[in-house]
Length: 418
Image (tube, rainbow, N blue to C red; front, side, top):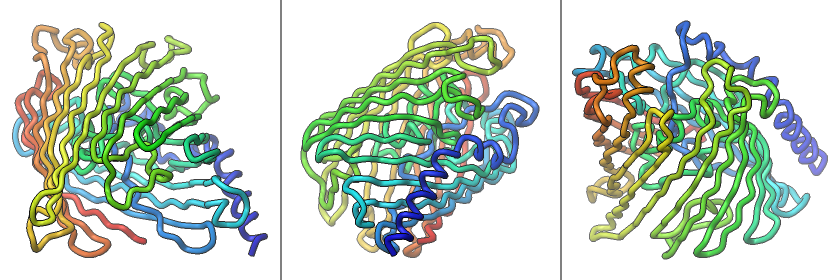
């Protein structure tokens, strides 16, 4: 058995080291050629998209799930219509301590598959992307990384990872479907090459935390959807610091070191450095900041209330989204007979700079409104241990600052396989 564990470790290392070359092979289509035009924005997938890993044997655990949805633009936007999306992920972890090798090591590896029947933005026309699983068709390795916990308060991670697994995470917004609730659009819209869904990237992270404070810094490759050398298309550097107080039940600081406590206040900063401005479709060098505040309270009848505020800024004149504000509430156990259900409401407002937005749309700057705002109501109903149903309704004011107000309906089915 020890030989088997050593073999598994070698396989995971090999997969992590060869992820870059293989990801290009697995991609179903060259992103730059998607619909013969630029890659539309597709960001904000929940950083907790893959369920908790289930332990199989010494050191090895697995998880898998799939989300399928029907997206319908009911009124306004560019045109009425519907399209379907499907996203699935399967992954595994190998814990070296549980395998009897060394303490604090953990390898992770996951595969992502995406299918979309159409380009969502061609219906609703929004810049923030109403569905956080919409993306160009692809099958690729998504996560191939190694984490080493050196002490109880410091750890490092290296490999192919999603920025939004560790930065700009708002726990109480994770069930909302609009992409902006997952990661602020001041980062992702202004830098289409951010290493987040649907294109993770090579990165290195150092994190420290104790019961009340956390801090982490990382460097990720720029524009990871075009797999060349690691930093040929620039890099993104990030820092985030957090203040945490109170303690939620069953909280494990080792596995949840990026978001813990009944009350959370986090601030972050990022800088994208462009190495070759002449490359087609890449963002210019730019920087930004963000902040997240969250609170959690126990109510009568075993109900739980969570609240959040998100803010983002990238005020340089070249950025189409200079400012962002998001806020919302999540109510767990809303009805006595439905203990595993939850109800969430949210507002996501992205301010728009008329010049860059008008240039992208091919219209006059005077035609662009000052902001796009999405109001969302969603309910997650757990049908069985492995299946949940989520109806979602969004009203989007001034999509892309140009199109008529849009009403979007989404019906999503979430299936966990393990």
